[in-house]
Image 1 (cartoon, helix red, strand yellow):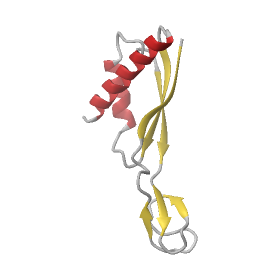
Image 2 (cartoon, rainbow, N blue to C red; image 1 turned 180 degrees about the vertical axis):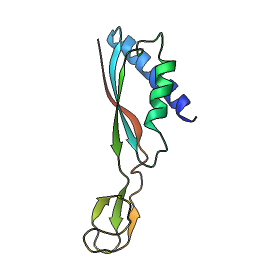
Image 3 (tube, one colour; image 1 turned 90 degrees about the vertical axis):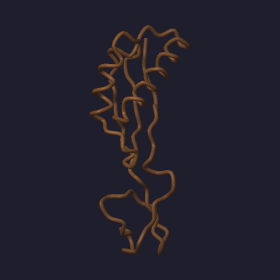
Image 4 (cartoon, rainbow, N blue to C red; image 1 turned 90 degrees about the horizontal axis):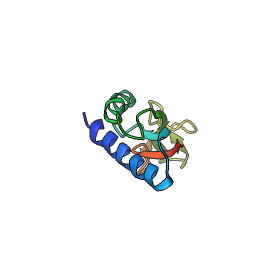
Length: 113
């Protein structure tokens, strides 16, 4: 349910951008979603289809790009994407989350005409 306010913000931003650029419609919106953001693609898509009616985004295609959380080994310093394990793929050491990674959610780009 927390995707609805996010979708409404996306539509608002796209309406503003359409006005600024003189677009009649937004045709594609590229979104970046981090694995720790708790945003679910299917929910965003579902809410978007309903909320975008009668807006310049009504027929826009949503494209989702997923970003992993990044980890750093406390032993060797290797940085690597989280993939079901916190063990370093180089030395087997323990790792920690690199602050700010995996929490992304933003509009990367968009197309319109």
